[in-house]
Each structure stands twice: as structure tokens, then as C-alpha cells.
Length: 279
Image 1 (cartoon, helix red, strand yellow):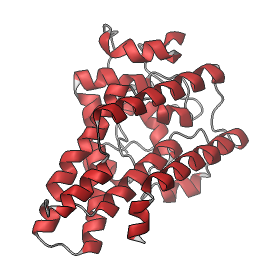
Image 2 (cartoon, rainbow, N blue to C red):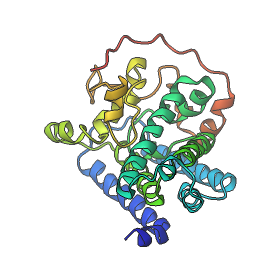
Image 3 (cartoon, rainbow, N blue to C red):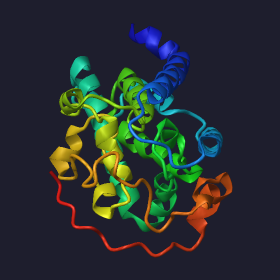
Image 4 (cartoon, helix red, strand yellow):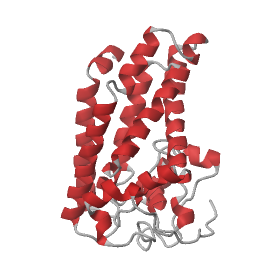
């Protein structure tokens, strides 16, 4: 099974990624959580275009992907797990968790380091919330995100299948958690005990500063509870909350040109931080 996954990783990921998009788009169309406020065609075109630019930049800069890097590391016996001869099943589990925890740290830094925030605010500047927001990242952020996992792999030396599963989960989760789909409250409450849900992550896209500086987890939700960055729900409610950033409210934020140039333009003045208490 492991050999099959490693030999067909690209095909599996591609089918899962586009299959998830199709399912989530259908979900959004049948059971939308919120009404759109901006032209759908404009948003989908720009968000898809910057996703392609992101993919192109990563392909040019990184000659190998995280999975290929993990195979090289495993072949040379590098990493803490291999040095300590950790059982394979435990190394896989710890590898997946460690990489996902690294994703939490990466996201936290994107909000705390000024230049990284210049890149990441492109993701937050959309005025609506749907699966295409999960594609909307500046290419330089994509490079930082891709590179961030390599030191984790080098340090720990997780089995390649752990890297494959972790990358698969974050890719699929990135589409699902940005879904503008309605989910029953009781179901969301139980699922988010382990996994990030759309209602949990939507808080992170609130215009309220204290809310968008929360819920950084990518796949597993418990990191935010563990590190004290969890906010259960927006103060205004999911249908009443405003999506985006208070200093970026005009239509230029929806255009591809603005997204690409934004990190290199003067930062607009942010509003004071709102006193939101984590739940």
C-alpha cells in the first residue's frame, strides 16, 4: 500500500484536490452559509489566476517536492526518528502531527512578522468567503510555505508516507475549511474537536482583529486550543460578520494585479485591535 501511494502520489493528489473542489462547489451552491457580496466571476478568476502563479513560482524555485525530499532523507538515515529507531507506525503518526503543528507555527508567523503579513494579507483581503479563498495566496507566500516544511523533515526524518499524508491532508483541508457551506451545529461541534471546520476557520477571516488573529490550525483543530489561539465563533455571528480587512475595503483587492503588487505597496493604517477573548 505504501509503495502504491508513493509511486502514484501526484495522480492521487490531483484527483483528490479537484474532486474536493467539485464537491465543495456543489455544497456551496446547494447549502450556502452566507450570501455573496462581490461578483463571483471576478473573484473566481482572480483567485484561480493567482493560484496558478503560485504553483508556477513553486515549480521554478523548488526542484523537488517535500515528498521527494523526505525520500532522500530516509535513504540517508537522517533525522531524529531514524536516529532513535522509532517504530514505523509511531514515526508516521508523529510525523503527520509534527508537520501539521509546523503549519500552525507557520501561519502564526504569517500574522506576527510584518513582511510575512504583507504577503499573507492578500489571502485575508477578499471580501467574501468560499473555497477559492483557499487558493488565494501570494506566490512569495507559497514559496515560504513550501520551504517551511523542509527543515521539519530534515530535523525529524519522518517516513515518506507521513509526508505524503500530511501534504494530502493540508491540500484537501485548505479547500474544505474555506467552504461557504452550511453544516449542522451539532455535527460541527463534534468534528472540530479534532479537525478544523469551515465555521471554525471562518472566524479567522473576520474583519475584527482579535478574531482574525486566531484559529491558525490547518488540519487538526487542537493546536489552537493547546496554544491559546482558539476562538469558537465570531461575535457578530457567521451570517452577520464582515469578511476581510478593515483597511482594505475597495474592489481593487479583488483584482489579480493588486494581489501581486500589494506586498510592495505602502501598508494602509490598521484599526486598533478589538478585545476579543478566546473561548
